[in-house]
Length: 232
Image 1 (tube, one colour):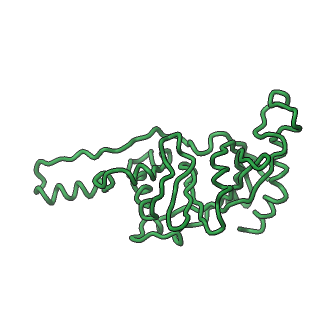
Image 2 (tube, rainbow, N blue to C red; image 1 turned 120 degrees about the vertical axis):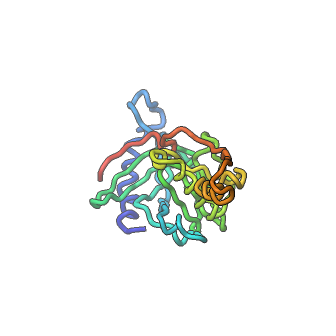
Image 3 (cartoon, one colour; image 1 turned 45 degrees about the vertical axis):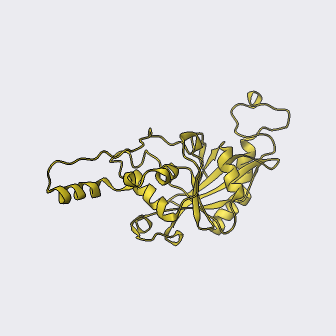
């Protein structure tokens, strides 16, 4: 983690969280206007957020070593040891640090449980992917029916590619469903282009057809829906 980010979470982040917390133990949100967190909230240890690129997605045997650094670092926010939200810092191309506050206590709990050897990745739309002990789980998407069941790195790659294959306009707006991909029948995971090729070769281009069932979800950004953005 860059020294600048470490310093930001140590020196700047506490004041940000304090400014968005109730001023005392008897105050209520109605007394102070719109605030995010209870009185006495603190910032936990920041976690480096990784992401993936074409090297990971096109590999025949993808590994976590192929993941790439994003420009994001995220820390849990706690009140008396209980997770109440998150603070995400982003290093912009211009060298500024921007941040986002979120009241997602579930994601905060996951960040609190991340171990030193774990790897955390995100595409900013699909929650957090935690790689631990040779497995990967997707968190923060339970209300959309995405379960944090264990999968392999190869299965995650397949789920990402399946999400991309939904078509133009859905790639950025849609989100990855790792558990749905893992639990789907094998035939439904095969790229539709392979089906077209198989039908042409197998039938000489004459009558045959197959309908692949796909789960299509509404577009949106369910991961971080309430946020504050400021520049340092």
